[in-house]
Length: 593
Image 1 (cartoon, rainbow, N blue to C red):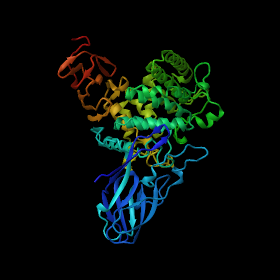
Image 2 (cartoon, one colour; image 1 turned 180 degrees about the horizontal axis):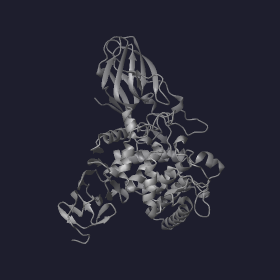
Image 3 (cartoon, rainbow, N blue to C red; image 1 turned 30 degrees about the horizontal axis):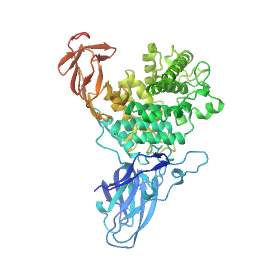
Image 4 (tube, rainbow, N blue to C red; image 1 turned 90 degrees about the vertical axis):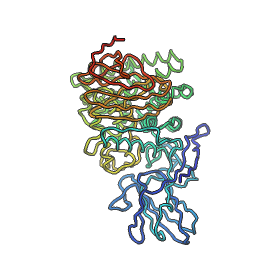
């Protein structure tokens, strides 16, 4: 039985959040601990509360313990960091259903804090919601039957569990995908993207990473838009977070292909470029306060790989240049050609200075900032992800970045993986995603997480929470790069199919796009074979792995013109519909009919 309560959250007089609802979820197990205590497991963590349907006996008092963590077979009542535990009491009267929820927590419901944005509130009709998987019930009369307890779990009402799929020859990678996919679903509870349960506040970088993964796991676009509007009203403090607003707007345009939403917000994006901080060569400069506090590079501070902060900060300027490029694209899309030309000129000027002053050719790496020769992973991973590395040095920088391992947080790992996958280091990227130790998504899975964490481990961020979707990057990375599905044109009219097998033998999946689902199924070995299904109206450019002995490409059994560029076969013709593709050993020239 699934019952839903549809509620629209009012964000402001002019903005309505994406619809969210409560879903009734049954427990996966009920265990009698002793004659007084019952332990209930709902299988995964979700934000919600409980509905109890008592037996006919009346007048029983019950105590309910909610928890995200289980210790020695019991709900952990003193969990670490911001991991949630709460307790509530209720009186059962006859057979009337009883909603049980803990009291509000001031840390994530305060709207009048003097220095931080207001928390996002859930509808009062719901009662308090919190993230939990297990409950212990003390005082339940008799045996607790599954039909007598439901979790009222909050999710986006638009969510479609069948929208996306991913499966590969690596079972750990499959488990990581499911962890991250579900993390996006579970954290839609507030109607906008929030930074987990500790504050329930949107942050720009968190929101952008959520947006990317939401697009690759579901059909909804409204939640990202509502979060953008919220953040325009309630911006946060880090320097690079301002640039993420430009990233969010650009991602919306690329995904939807619609310019109307963008047009209404274009002017509000201009201050996010921080052009008032630009000096003559186009690079932006940080003052003493910004160097000390606002320039964030990565978070928490211990995840910065020894980064040396300077007034001209390499990471800050990498974001600045990439934002200028995105602004140029968006200005052109809105018919503002002169502004687009201006942004392109600014980007070119800043890129020239960036490469000249901050790149160290003999190290194959970027310095952290002007005035230091320290080369953290961060100073190179962001330029690599943003295409700012001089072409002749891309291979060297990729080796440097990959060689540093996972020397960054779960946030920066989004960009680390993008840089590695995009530049031929897919094997290394997959190794890092599934690496043993405590700095990988494998560690989250093996630790029993069902929603991604805020940090790799408690020892790296002792106050972290366990329901933080900025740690769910593989939800977008695996379909984008392993399946290889990305838009070439706004709205997904043209796409690029560029699989990155790494050491995988096969992978398949479904990617939701506005025109319809893209279906990919490939096998990699001595040859590379792929079946591809595109929705009506979509065409694809194929950039296929060039196996060592391969001589060409066949589509639906017919040799097609293709040229070998590095480790890729680039097929001349665009494909559509249902196609079968093979990279084979036939001798085919790019000019054959």
